[in-house]
Length: 293
Image (tube, rainbow, N blue to C red; front, side, top):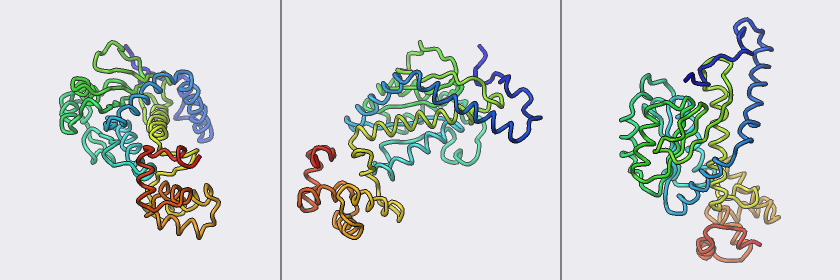
């Protein structure tokens, strides 16, 4: 069976002879189709997210496994969770075939070993409460399939993100997120539409899981990690916006709360000490709405 991602796009048959304006116009037209296609079938993504939330509640972890562009996008999404949601770096992890050296340099053949995929799962000590999401635009990366096979064997929930027709009878994948995006404008270059779609899907999975894990209040990033000046300013502005305190008082409150926005908001609302505010948050599983409203 011919892979969708390897077929020719008739709209780009004369690509090398097109003007720059026509090339980028065509790229834009193709890219605009992506959210529409994804939006027609969100129920599997929702199912995967529910499993991730359940995993977090059971002290489980989320793993993205991929090769090349797919692996890099998984590592990117995972690496953004600690600063955005103040998560432990081990909670969401990205694994790329060939190791972290493959992030900046292509390591040929790294995706071709089923056994290497199985081995990385053993190295990560995958357990039943974990979720393992494979990312393979073609659906055929042996490293990814080996990782999913071993994860399923160990009792973890497994899912695959792919943009080709895939055999849904494969026993070791619980749920398949599959979309037909049509061929790329450069045949087989899945860093393009498939890469864009992958980033969108990973955003949905990680962000929604964090929102439902009480990492967000209203639409405020209240669990951010204050690790630089930009994030410190954001934290102060969040406190000011919610409490209606001025910037100077909000800054002082953040300092008293040891740079924890949630604790600062609870301290302001309840007049509790730092330690008591932390305890109240813990009692409410970090859900600010239970305390502030």
